[in-house]
Image (cartoon, rainbow, N blue to C red; front, top):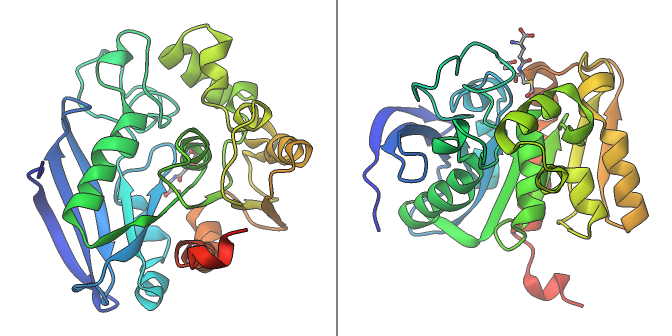
Length: 289
Ligand SMILES: N[C@@H](CCC(=O)N[C@@H](CSC=O)C(=O)NCC(=O)O)C(=O)O
């Protein structure tokens, strides 16, 4: 089924095209916005694509404006997709009162607790509706799909790759919330979106998913050591320990002096795009065995 997309704006960028879209989302029940960068190679060719999940307070614009990814995507022939970080204007009282929860803080899961369960279906939106729009209505190779993200979006990238291994062939993250059940951001969001059951929390925690046997393509993870959220919110070492215990390959790089901002992301985005491009253009014959 072709979904009607409203083009909000389009901009030539490094020879490709940066576009912003809005559409009615069946899964959310409200309008949703997303952004796409199509590199210059696109024509008859089907391209690898990278979904980027942004963090708390961000929108579909943040990554495209601040990460500086298009220069490398144009060079590599990689399509980029980013999306808003939650449903908006739902009418739920207080939805936009707290930057850590509600609007701009959908945590890439499907809420099961009222009132959030009526609209907050970000996991299904990203893995089903938006995924099908991108694969069905853009020049994409359906076997070459990567996922990345930052902070809350890094949690989203890791958990969606772990929960839906058939959908994503490459994974990376910047400063992910790597063990949300052990940090205040995660505990606030999970208690309100998912209720009290520990089982439902574990299904959306990257570290717990590794511990329970889920696996993902070797993720590249970058973490700044001057990140003000590192000690209390992010816990990459919990994820690293679980991966070591499970013999899950992982590339975790720690960078002295870098913080949580898009200055950090823009410094290392080239490495992430090259990581995805390598995985997404591997000849299956080379990786068999
Ligand atoms: N508003 C907050 C800061 C919020 C913040 O730092 N958001 C990060 C993601 S944090 C985890 O998901 C972000 O990417 N912000 C966008 C940006 O342009 O930097 C505060 O006031 O402290």
